[in-house]
Amino acid sequence: MTTILITGAGSGLNNGAALELAARGYDVIAGVEIYPQQRALEIQAKQRGVNLRIEKIDVTKEGDRRRAMSWDVDILVNGAGIIEGGAIVDIPAENIRRQFEVNVVGPMLLTQGIAKKMIARKSGKIIFMSSVVGILCGPFVGTYAASKHALEAIAETMAMELQEFGVQVAVINPGPYLTGFNDAGFLTPKDWNDDPATRVFDYDKLAFPFEQFEPSMAFSSIVDVITGASQLFRNVVAPDLAGGVREQSQQIWNRKVADGLGTRDGLVQQSYDLKPETLVGSS
Image (cartoon, rainbow, N blue to C red):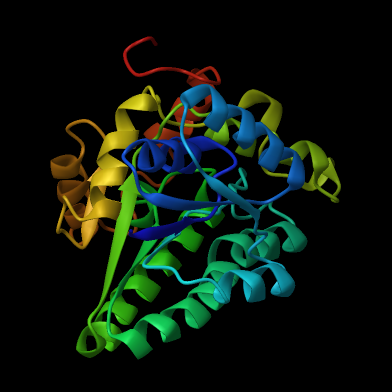
């Protein structure tokens, strides 16, 4: 039986994907960051009537990573991640570091150990849960986007390096889904260890700058990537969004540094206009 380790399964899209994988009969190790999430997932699995092996895996903790590296894993899904909302010029240093420790450094170190076991047996698959903002960018999600851009670079490089050993690498790029994850990121300025008077923006007036999709529609597509039903390296998971993402990623080649200078960017204005937890089509 194929064994799949998915981190960050305590909430959000990874949570739904872990339960869907288990429902399809896969041997799933669901990694959660903290013990309360472990109990909550146990209840979810019982209600769903599926079997999950639930383990505490905080990817920033060396001991947790070491335990996970000792397991026999056929497919590793690096899903653990956090989002730090705020403008690049405002986010305190400790919050920037935390963003990259959770989203980049921890997953990369975990992957190193598991990948070497895959290399030894010449089979396996490594998946990085990136984001549409791992390809594009958006205001007030810049550090999160930067961490996901870093994952894109790691994944592309590993795909080249591990090809000869029979190890597959892929990325999943979800669009904005209403799991609570994105909106929670815009609460983080409340806990910053800084002087609010020095901030450029008033975060009480801002919200996540994109309308969000209903999350259940994403679970099946994510599982298709994990299980190999999709053979693509990059997988944009959002309704009818892939073409637009490709088109927007090309526009940067024609943009001039003075375009729009002195005016507010449209997406910045959208952060002012949208309410938290806005579903697509409801605004």
